[in-house]
Length: 102
Image (cartoon, rainbow, N blue to C red; front, side):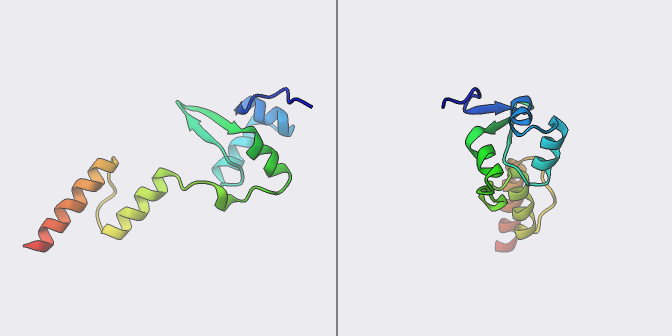
């Protein structure tokens, strides 16, 4: 049986597929209970991952680490202030390494 839904779902389509509200989907994604990505400010969901969630086959550890979490972890590791961008983080790390060499 062919699905009526495309491979990549919008927020509305994911909510319809799971028969819940769009707000429920947004809360689940924010809490890391459901896979999803924001692209250009719009939420997108992989249909197979959504179906795996219903079958209890998707686990939060399957979700890639968001860039924000990676930046925070690297900031802590390097002992620098929270950067505005990854480039700022790299510059701060380079500056700190140079100061250690002196």
